[in-house]
Image 1 (tube, rainbow, N blue to C red):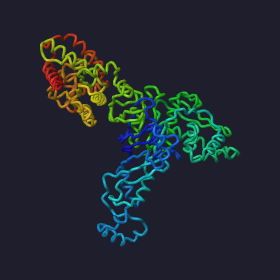
Image 2: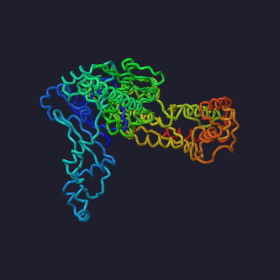
Image 3: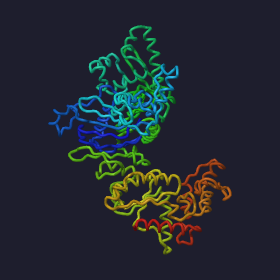
Image 4: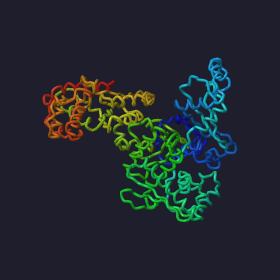
Length: 618
């Protein structure tokens, strides 16, 4: 079951967020105090994994409507829809939730007659076979002063018993895990004092304890250890012996779960208990020396807290719960942030992940559809914008930085025609060929068009989304291969046409093969040159003698891909395009007129520039 959309109203600085669509991974980008934390905390209370979390009118009611607080009871705060997958739907209809009317349908009479003849029918509750619906949704809501309500949308039309279906929804709707406090100190804990603090707040109010206290209780829960029994065991020799086994089991389990999410180096945990004092040590496998957790970096301690809380909420199976992460990776090195994004990708197969960030490195450029811009409007009220579109400079600064822009550069680009290309190599080759053609009196790239290199084809949709959102006069040139086609589809599916059409602006998507007239199935920027030219540059760069007959004739028609296969299969080498480009640049230095270009290059380049220029003229 997956969260598909939610809405928050009357909560702190949120009057009405509007419906917010979410993906398997969704990034909320915005400045401090815009309301990102408020949004997550309201959503978390809808179905929290921490018992006792609830809305409090004395703290959560909007301050600019303080007079209405006296009538806040029953006011809706958060509502959400969850989509059931095929397995969920089968489980729902297999749990005896069919309404009596559906069970009495004539179409089941024959089935029921057969069941009466079966001597085992009376020993098991058997549901008649039915055609399961393709789509079923759970609707959940929570108000001030109330518990969360659950229902299956259109349960009567689906032939379900509404009450029993609601019970199923309450039991199976995924829990929200909110991780926002990074101050897990990792210092020693006196278990007797922890028990006292917990009792003072009430055992049902674990969420009121500090992050340190909550984490230690998570540790004990994961080891299936009751804190009262654990403390009592310390009173006898036999009890202390049993407790030593408990802590070893806990250490092994916590190490195993942490290593699934932390890939930078191998680490194991050792829980040590002396009387009522509990310490957690982290041991780098390469060093073998234990260091108390409080002496490790803040980023490492955050990852520990994240891993253990997630493990606790998902029952160790890493399934179904929804992660709400505030500013994840803020204490991590860049490589750690990349690891974290990769961990998100892996977890998204079984979990929905929502996170806030103001770090450019935590925005995945290959997936602009995952971005939600958080703005502050109308007396500091939260507003959500889907996609990388905003008129406010603060949230857009994150996107600009992710795309390698400065405010000055983004302003300059906005006043020009902008063509996004897949990378720096594309920009260099296009610029060189354009210069040679223009010097010979032929059509080159218009000097009004600025080339804006993305890093790869997969990241061009983020650049496109930014250009569309800023209403630039822009387009993108993509290779005619599978990566280019995927990027084209993603750009078309971003649902930003209304933004572009609002002032009559148009965003163009050009495919290199069609634009250049090259008769190949797959076409990349290197295919503007004849295959022999590129093969010669590779031979010079690597000191090889690859022949035309060595190139494979099956698979891709792109020369770079064909050469790469030869390098891998015959020479155990990988293709370094920068190395080859260095040799190409040496050739470029000898070209000043069209006749210097390799055969066929001028015609393909001129066709390409004519198509680009014509697209921007229209």
